[in-house]
Amino acid sequence: MTYMSIEDEIADRCGRQMLYPVIPRAAGAPIQRAMFIDEALQAVLESPEADDAWEKRVGELRADLERFVTGEPIDPSYLYLLYPTRDCVWEIRSVRPDPSIRVLGLFALKDVYIATNHALREHLEGWQSRAWVEVKRTARAAWRRLFGTFTAMMDTNIHSLVTGALDGRYFKNRN
Image 1: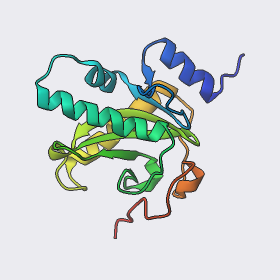
Image 2 (image 1 turned 30 degrees about the vertical axis):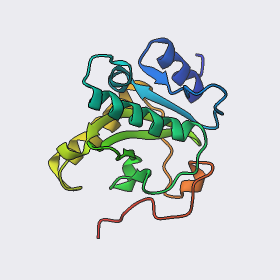
Image 3 (image 1 turned 45 degrees about the vertical axis):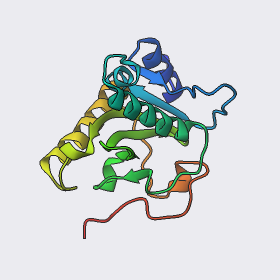
């Protein structure tokens, strides 16, 4: 039996077009971290059929995702661990301009974020709403579909997950 590492699994999913690497578009931009996005988010980023406002919004989303990859400092306004923390589901917040977009995912390794799904913030309501529960459940299910028994990194210490993260509160207890 051949053992595959999580790196091998990611490469396989990219080869099968289940995941796509986020590559900075700017020539010479550094790649300090890795992000892989699901098919649905890839379709949004590559879709040429939208009005000018949506095209601009998608461009800002792409820039926000590239921010992770190029190694820019990360803070809680950008990356946040969702409740319950044991589920290991994080959100990247792309907030400007409206509509705000949340890109949910889990960490495969330090500095390797797997974006499993996304949602417009306006459709999610309050942080304990059914819509939030569903997008978090979708993120976990997508992880299992992609990686089976491999577990995502579980840590509330941002420095264990992301190089270059600024100190701050990256998660909220349910209190």
